[in-house]
Image (cartoon, rainbow, N blue to C red; front, side):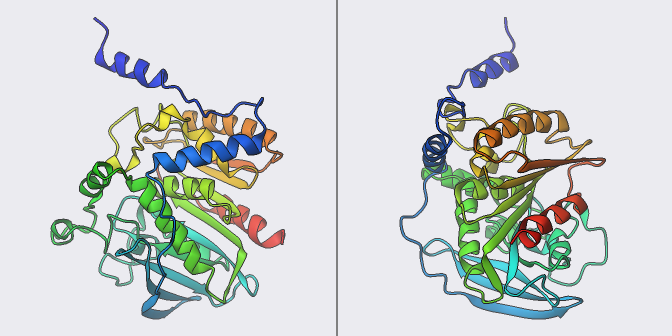
Length: 343
């Protein structure tokens, strides 16, 4: 008798992927069709956006930048806090901006140099490496939204547990799935609303906006850029791979799962919707969740898509010595080339 593992692998490998990229179809036609089908698999987005109604919660002068905590409306009845980091020496005025998307952990404070209670952190920055702070020190305006299910946006039972890293992903994702929605879809749309807010700020050049995310934040960063063409370039760290070799190869958080997505396409094709806009991948050689071999396979597929889209050379990667973590340096230099040098 064949093993259950073998059966499930055959089942997912046989999924139709009916919207997968192929050269015979004009790129624009393929992109439009897959983007529409992808959005539907995510649960769809509201036809009309609620008023942002921003409220500033705090303002702190830091070394080299100003940190604001702002709250905005995303969906009707749902508010999201975000950190806005404003460089004291911006690369230009108005300034390019980068959306910084955290992964699993204790939320937006984890990428802005703060402890879970909002106090300044002096210890190990962990896998996120305070990359929002690194980006503002590059001279960018940086927006770091609090993803649904983390930090201040947890269910009461998790927030009151006394465990800052305990998230609400499973219960929230389950509820969304039963309502025909997905956590991925909610986080992507809320990141689009963060972009809406960033574009209202007079400090920001709305035509020069990038995005960078790690792990689950890499999902959000890559797929938000895939569906929102206002984003000029994207850095996806510790996520770009294939579903077969990552999400399906081990237990992952429920927030990763998009019902029926393999009936449409594999992960590299979904990230290929970013083309011909620029894309940069980070991959650690000891990443146990999204290993470098699968990232290289995804990169090969992406280069084929980019070539057809007229974006040859616009997809790059940093394969570094490390684990499931932000690397940083090459990605920051790449973002400066994309958002500063080629105005």
